Image 1: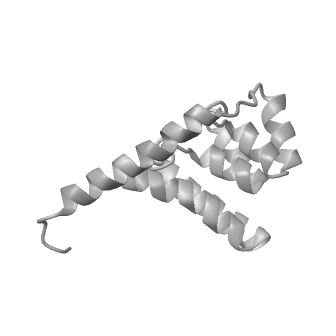
Image 2: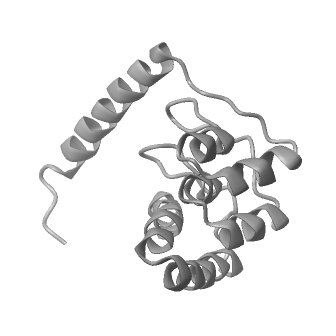
Length: 140
């Protein structure tokens, strides 16, 4: 499920960033497909602890953001750095996404320096662990 969650989050971020119109349409279809096949709307990317709402808010993907919120997405989820979707929207200059989330009760939360430092160390530890687990396995 970790891999599927990562794909859901990155689909929102990268497909939405490719081309505003084309990306939003493809991204919306991808998100609908994931959710219709049982991927939780609040699935978290293991590396950064981000949800699809984080991705949509950061990129200003309003169609996707509306769809996710309408399907029960957590608008106050915190990523590994301690940032909420509203923080990512605001810090990326996505005013419409920021206002949309705040109107629905989202809180603007920004992780502090200590949280960010822990995040960096946690990511390094996770990478070392994942690579160590892969040692000795035959290539796929």
